[in-house]
Length: 454
Image (cartoon, rainbow, N blue to C red; front, side):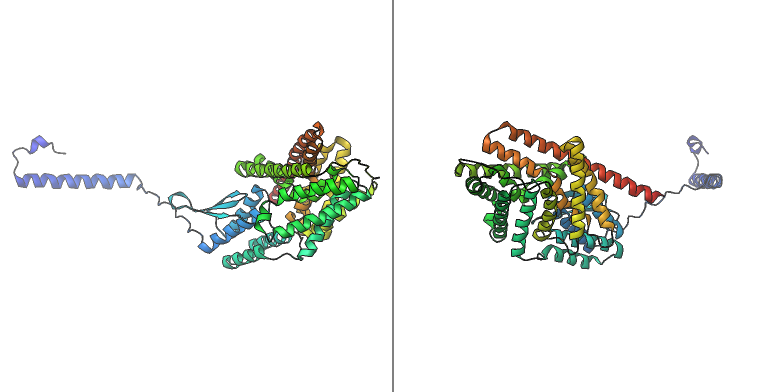
């Protein structure tokens, strides 16, 4: 290189020659470096996969809406949606599920967009749940076109019940009698259960046509049932009104919401779990308020003379009658009744056996522990219904909703400390059932993972 002070006094031609010399030297140096060192190559940024088509996103949103209304736990709903999205190759779709709706995020980074689908409407019936889960499994395997899938889900959500209104009312009566048999009542109490069950069935049918009644249905039903139980059951049948109140009101009890909410909290779905717990506690408060008003309006029976219990066989017959009532009232999918009875009797037997060994809390844990593997086992049979179809009715034999409302009703009727103690026991039973469900689900998941790894 030529120093700058050496160029002083040199003419224009000399400077141009020096510049040419400098350019040649730099070029020679660059060629030497290129030979010695490999060229520096900057990798191109990875190409982002194209976003899924809009009709597929709409299909996933509708599937999330329907699954939310099916009443399953948040973790299970997310698993179903992720598996459905993966089956269609939509790897960049993520879901955030709440009891009242589902958020769908498509893409990542600045290009991501989020959609929301509210889960408005009544909970799905058992026949709708069966059709929904069967179609979701079919869509995973056969890759149904998204537009066709969206239309099919809309058809399921709008499908009328399998049975008419009269059958649903009779089913509610049969269901109430089945729950009443579970407490080994007298013949007179069984008659009271049948009458009150028919009354609740008529109320629920009317609420489908009158919005004002639908909004106040839990309070109205609790008020009228407690009033009738006090007037008819206490004065005419000479039975304990607190025992007559529970089976007819079982359809309004929030045991499922309380237990699934506890499961959601334990699995990290804090918002969904807290929402379900608040919903369940609010329903208990509404029912207790209706019972309190009904008792205040009723006259106190002068004499109560409970009849002779039917016998040890009554609870076992009650499981069968309860299953038949649920099959008619909800109603369940065709061909699911035998499987429903198998699950009900197995869960009932597990709960009863464990209760004899270690008390009611151990029985609740054992029932929850057996429920998930058993319902999934039935689902895996060639003619078996989806697990949710047998899971929800069996919940009614496990959840402490009836026990919890019994505590509330006795606290209102007698102002006894025993009502509060039963209510606390019911909440502890919720935890026991939820723990059993969690352990059963975890064991089933680990077993499936072990088989897949073999």
